[in-house]
Amino acid sequence: MRSSNPVFSRRGFSRDNGGYAGFDAQYAQAGTATNPYATNPYAIDPTTGMPAAPARGAAMTIDDVVSRTAMTLGVLIVTSVVAWLALPVDPANLGKSYMIGVGAALVAFVLAMVQSFKRKPSPGLILAYAAFEGFFLGVISAATSYYLSAGVVIQAVLGTMCVFAAVLVAYKMRWIRVTRRFTGFVMAAALGFVLLMLANSLFMLFGGGDGLGFRSGPLGIVFGIVGVVLGACFLAMDFKQVEDGVTYGAPREEAWLAAFGLTMTLVWIYLELLRLFQILSGDD
Image (cartoon, rainbow, N blue to C red; front, side, top):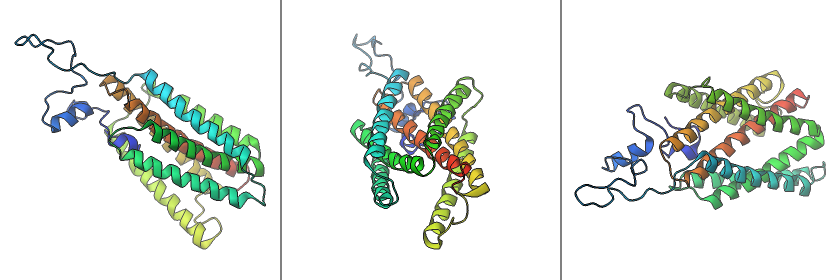
């Protein structure tokens, strides 16, 4: 099984149908019989009296994932607050602030793509992504607070925290089981969702108004709920990847990759909730 997150999709955290961990599969393709991360570093070769395998490096733990995720989200929150306080969103300056926010979002997207195709996680790149993404979120949140109310932003933040907690509990209780069928369905639904949102944005850009109406009115509420549900599914898939990474002995540096993936998913959920609460507040 592969994760929905592009940063996880090139890593073999999970178990394949044949019963091998993803790290095992990578080394099997290279002609190595066993996963070096799973090898007992203290085993002795009886013929030579020497260690049978090189000592294993530090493996990823849940604490590693929690600490890296806290650092990444911390950077995102700090830059969000800076953008909120530094950029004016009154009618006279809103356009300029939005341009800066969109520019930050584009930089964050490029950094995310670069990290996604790197063979190893780069902490500096991941933290830079969080900084620019946070700046974008700060502009969007400040504008929402100014033109609607700060309550909408607070609702979106609390809603994101509640979704995270609910999915984590459901996953730990095994109410949600991440299987190949589950992953395939979520990926197909996510692709359809993104294509519809892209089409809606293009119609808004060239045709004006609400485009196809997917992000406003009753239809916008439906699509907002769908977006949140998809985000919750992504979270479950990310939890599965983290669990498999810990179980199968992924290197400690992979904790940065886990933090990166979780941050992207939480940003998705926050933006969907923010838009949903905007619609419910009467701003179509």
